[in-house]
Length: 462
Image 1 (cartoon, helix red, strand yellow):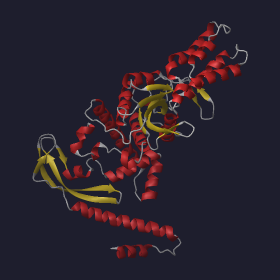
Image 2: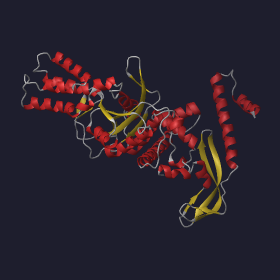
Image 3: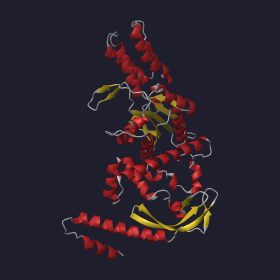
Image 4: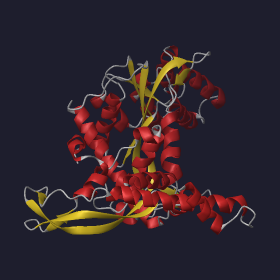
C-alpha cells in the first residue's frame, strides 16, 4: 500500500519540479486523505445499519425496513458514501436510519470529528477566513456558509447543554466532585460588554446617548440601539502569592460563561459554574465586579457566602470624577485627589466621604447634587472597598481577568469592523469562544445533542 501511494505521488510531481517540496507535501497529503477516505468507507460498510424488519420509531410505533439508501457524509478525510438501512413509520409519516444515529450524522452530513474542527475554526476567526484555513491547513473543503451554520448550531446546542447542566447542579441532581488538589480561593469576576447587533435584535431597546464614528469622535443619539449587552463571568482560583505578597492566579484555572440573558437568568448559570468549580469545598469564595447593582444583587441572592469586592480600578475612576466635581472649590485639587487615592487604597472610604462633605466646601444646587451623586457609589459600596484588608489577606482586588475576557473572548471575534449579529448566531459563537478559552479544547468541548448518546441525553436535557 505504501509503495502504491508513493507511485501515485511520483506520477503527479517530483521534488525537482518547480513546485518543489511544498508541491510534494501537498500531493502526499491529498493522496493520504484519499486513501484514508477509502479505508473509512470500507470500515463503515461493514455495518449497514440493518436492525431487523421492524424497529421502534422513537414515538412508540414500529417503523418498517424499506431499503438500503446512500448518504454522502463529509469527514476529515473527505466525502465518504455511507450505505445504510432506511426505515419508515407509516403512523408518523417519517423515516429514520439507525446507523445515522449511531454515527452522529442524523440530520446532518458532517461527521462529529469534522464538526469539532469546523467549530474551532469558526470560533477563532470570521467564517470566510475559517473556510480558507480549513482548506489550507487541513485540506478540507467547507464553504463559509456551512462553517457558519455548523459552528453556530453547535454553539447554541452547547449553550443549551450548559443551561441544563446548571439546572441539574442547582437541583442537586448532579453533584460535582471537589477539585483536586483543592485551591484556597475561588473568584467569580463578572462584567458586561456590548455586541453589535442587527436592527431586528435591538428593536425597542434604548439607545446610548452617543456612539463612536470610527474616527475617534462620537455621533449624537439617533434613538436607535445598535448593541446588546453580553454578560461575562470568569471563574478562576488562587492558591499562592508571589514573593512580594501579591496573589497569583492558578495556571489554566479560568473558565468562562457568556450570555445575552437578563441578570435573573444569568445568575443561576454563574452560581452553578461556581459550584462546579468547587465553591462548596473551597475555603474562600470572592465575587469581583465593577459596582453595577445587578452584579451585587446576583451575588447576594445566589452566592451569599462570598466576599464582595468592587474592582479598585473602577473605584479610582469614580474618585477622579468626584475630584473633578470639587476641583473648583478645593485649594489644591491635585493634592486633594492624591490624598483621597491614598485613602481609597487603604480602604478608608469614610475618610473620602468626610473630605468631600467637609464644612469648608459648602455646595448648593447643581454642584451639591453632582457631588452627592458621585458619593453614592462610595456610600453604596463601602464594605466592598476595604482594599487594605483584602490586600493583607492576599486577595485580588481588581477584575482585570474578566475585563481582559471581554476583549479577548468577546471583542476579538464578535466586535470586528462591520459585524452585525443575530442573538442566536452570536450566542453560538460566544459559547464556543468561552469553551475554547476555558482550557484544552479536547477536555472541555461539549458535544452538541446530535453527538450525545441517547442514554446520556436525559442528563443534558436534550
